[in-house]
Length: 123
Image 1 (cartoon, rainbow, N blue to C red):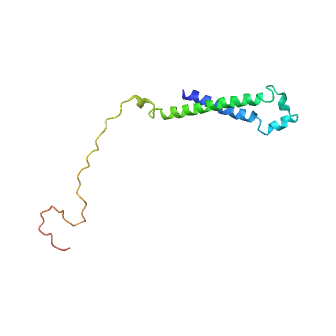
Image 2: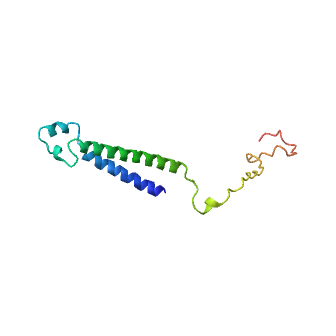
Image 3: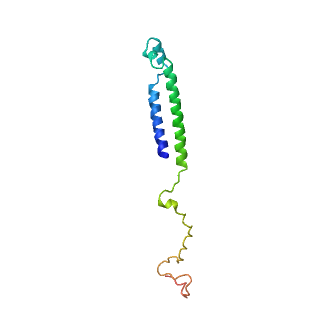
């Protein structure tokens, strides 16, 4: 479905580019009044401007709708894809308790809980 919307989106963008390039600017009407070739076109002097502007507006609306569709589709797409997407989530595990260790002592110093009777002897 996303691919179809993306293809329509790109085609609408290309159509808008082409239609905008085909349209005459506002200053082109003055040249047509003095014998320009625009008055003898297929749709008449103003018919082509109305036709092209309406088609451009329709293509712009299609472009807008496909932009919204692609945005909605990407925001509601499942993050997990593949084999693991159908698996239930793993149970929450508690972190393992760290083993109790005694702090490192400088060499030659007895542990604090030792029953050594020579604690006050300077070294």
